[in-house]
Length: 297
Image (cartoon, rainbow, N blue to C red; front, side):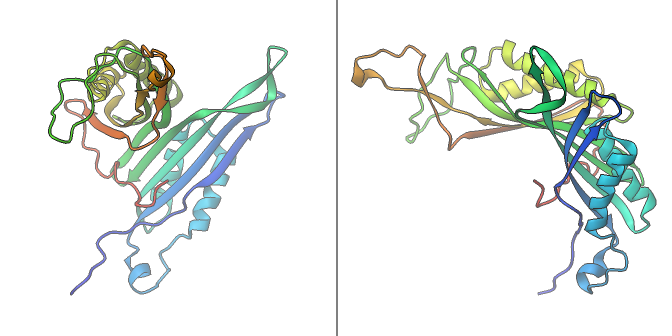
């Protein structure tokens, strides 16, 4: 058997960077989880143990902290772009860089109904994400979110599906529809006002989920993707992964109680996992932008 090194990249995963702006009595906070991966002519490090072209992962970690101080954090997308372009433009052996950022949201504590200047509480499970790929040809920005848990108590059905001898699921024209959404969208280019556009995409997705009658979670993902591309011209592609968080009616008949769609058992697993990719006609090629680390968080 002849083996060959087909592909490789290396970097620093999950550097926790908390940037606090203290220029005024009212402080601001951005809480990031930063992962970097460098691509280039590093085969000698793998095949021969030759580290002469390798920028240590510890250096990549240090750069994340230094850039947070020197440039601040206006958005996770902008911060990831600064880092990615630095690696490609300023580190000679690097031909490509992938920087992925997760941002954790904080909201201000209310004291006597007034927002406190320097105290926050973590806000829910939703995590904002950004992924920037840079190389000699340019920069591609992918924004997104994960763990956005949403539920609608009606306006959803699931019937007319294929059945066989193993099918036990009953048809329904009125069910709870719930998911913990992962969505990632690609921008056509920069500049983009990342915070404003992120908020707009999130609003469109949630509005569509709430107001459009669903014949299936698959249809809902298509409707959400179509609505985002229609409302946000900066976005050329959006990808979804949506676990179907099943809610089954609890059987209250042993207790002499009726249950007209009011009490449910929320099933943890197994769950249906629905995925979709919606692309704008004429969208530029994504190149390596969707290629992620095997060990990505």
